[in-house]
Length: 119
Image (cartoon, rainbow, N blue to C red; front, side, top):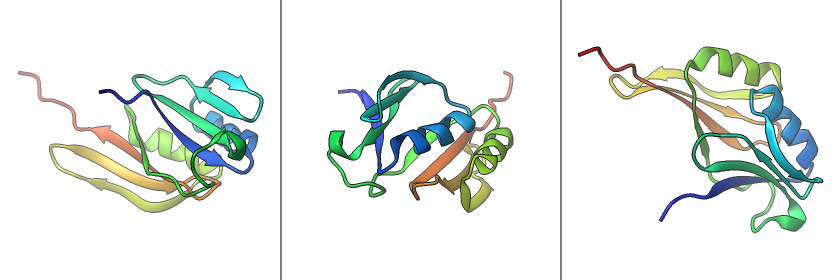
């Protein structure tokens, strides 16, 4: 079994999609405001309108984005309208993580993997 995609339900899908574009994602496909899919590595990340979704708006699971460098992505997200839930914290050999809320109050984690020592 594999994860095909993860989506957030939004009462204003275009507004939420604009936030994710400003935060650094680009749109791969859009069916108006019913379904907006972004380019990602691995499983797809999408924003769904209420009529297309199986969940109520802003009652979704936490989405975790793995990023190369935490601070630039965190800065872009804040500039786009995110609020910090938990600032960046070091998890030792695992990496670093920060939690934000997007404009629809969905909790998002940004994860930067620890660099592997050359060996």
